[in-house]
Length: 454
Image (cartoon, rainbow, N blue to C red; front, top):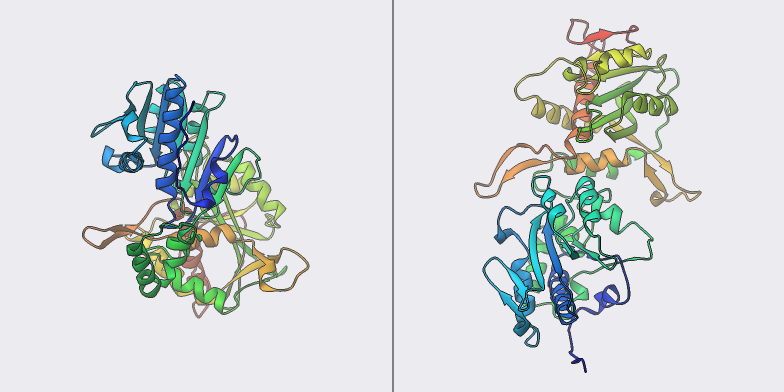
């Protein structure tokens, strides 16, 4: 007869581990007990499979795994040792954990592009637990998920959500798949929340209220260390400049791009659509795509009213070079479609900081369009047509050296492409709003196509 044991886990997580599922997960802030609970449940699964005579692998993955010290091994070891009935069934070393029969073994793997390929060679993966999974990319998930080939293999995911648009959040939280059992779990859901963490939580609330909701309550991040535009975005919302902004049909429209590519691993292609009305920068749309050909961009432009007869396209200096896949430049492709094109020359050393500073200076003149989501008239019923761009601007931040506590310049990640195209717009807008004849006619800009209206 099987021995009955009493396993203590947060009540909020009991439904996650009850019944059949393809994905089990939990998201939320610090102190919830998510990681320890999932580590413990992997060991219980290993014990059950071992007792049933099954053989296979439990993979514990994190995005970056430079050494075993970066892995979940310590959590799994602590979880096993916390259950006196469980510990005798395992062998635990400095770099390994396995059942004493050796039928079930743990493997610890990175899930970034450098190490993820090794997962393909791991046979009979019974369970894969991805911890700290927020930054794992769509490309990584596309490799991870097909490695679970057993009929009853499961994927377990735990993360602290930072972005609503992150691959992890979209796949596992924003879904109604009945085979996904995923819940939110925060410190208040942990009946064994320790006193030392409670003291830390209260200090955090007092000393760093901007990041408290994300770190402890599982909210999306609104404050990133070293973020460049936190104050500007706060003012944009507080002053009511994130609102319904209509395009002026008599004024030129402008599109400001950051160049991507058409390959699978290409950077994002981003565009901000705007009009300069007096001393206002009226931002109408944001567009972002990865790996799409120029025909896709042109289709979006025309659908949103950016036609060749009313729109000027602005490209960074690499817009005049050929795409890595097709022997045509973005400059010539847009011009062939009938658009007037301006290529901004390479600004040289310090270009990124120059764009950041220009963006900060023009932000007080920026209005961003929001469209009604429903018939309601309260502020919550509006969704910015620039939502993804706003998220990128909010995330764009200094790369930080924590050991020396110094900044290393802009972090080139998913947010940098939207921020770069916004910075390009800022540089052009500053020039357009200078006293005098608007945009300089001294050859600063290279023009192609029809004459540019200001």
